[in-house]
Each structure stands twice: as structure tokens, then as C-alpha cells.
Image (cartoon, rainbow, N blue to C red; front, side, top):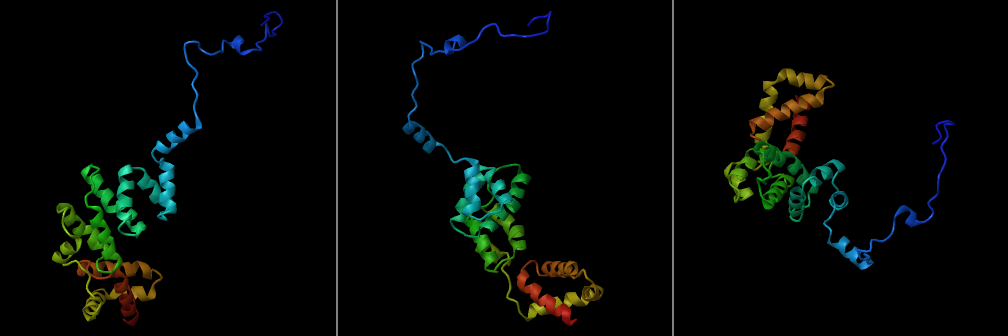
Length: 230
């Protein structure tokens, strides 16, 4: 740099590697990496998170959010896939892991699994077969299974009288009693655009009075019919 003119100019050039002092260290032997060795390393590497997430989405058709939640923990991935080998309702498995199971782990501040893979698979199967409501399954039954890890799901559900009743005349009597107890809400349902919100109120009252032992889907159908007739 010329302070008089304010200009800079090169004093010399570097054309060879040696000019940069870049040459093999005589004390280090050359290292040759073969393609076979590299392939062995790749084969021995554990599955990467993005690969697991892709499998959860493609093989088990989970939404992106669910896959992200499960792949965040190796234990979740293992538990999910163990249950998936028994029950093919993959979305329900993810919902249980993200819902009641995660809630339990947060409450107890532990990573322990409160129920076994067989118990969760059976819970989901009973719900899917309309023999058990999700409300009962995720509430009192789940708590009972946590307290008795070796218990059989159906046996405990039977002992607690949680298995769903068949939709029959008794159900219609229960619906009629709720309609009679809330005449103003019935009129509001029939004349208001907020019918869905009020329908939820009736369903909540029915599930409370039946202790969650009615099939919500069938109950909803009968309820709508009775409300329209009222």
C-alpha cells in the first residue's frame, strides 16, 4: 500500500501449492478411502430423523404434525411401530401418544409408558368396534390400566361397567328426559342457526347421564331425530 498515492499493488504472485506451504506432511501416511468402506459406514449408520419421519408419513399415512411429534423421541417411534404391528388404526395410535399418554408423562414428569402396546391396541380396537367410548377409554379406564399394568383391557372395562350399551328403548327414554329438562334449549335448537353448538350441549348431558356408556355416533343420530320431532 502506497500511503502517498493511496494505491495498493501486488508485490509477488503465488503460482504453486508449495508457495502456500501446502504439501503432504512427511510424518503422515496417505489415507485412501475406498467406496466399499464408505458404503459400509452408510449401512451401519442408524436411521436418520428425516428418514423416520418420511416412513411415518408414507407407510403409516400420518399427518406432518403427528410425524414430527413422534419422531422427536426414539421411544415414541418404537412404541408407535410396536402398536402398529397389532392394530392398523395408525392415526388413533398417534392420537393416543399425543394425547392421554403424553399428558400422563407431562404430569408425572417421566418418560415411562403408562400402558403396554397390547393394551393400547385393544383400547383402540374396542373403540373402533363401538364397544367402548373414547371418553370412557381415555378417562377412568386409562387410569385403571395405569394402576394395573398387567390387567386385561376388556376385563377391566367389564368390571367398571364401561362397555357401551346397545342403542335401544332405554336410550330413547334417556334422550326424552334430557329434552324435557331443557325445553328452552330445544326451542333454541330448532329456531337458531347455532344448532351444532346446542347439539353439543345435549350430547354432553347425555354422555354425562350415561357415564359415557353410549355409542356417541348412534346416540347423535337418535338425538337429532328426537329433537326434530319435539
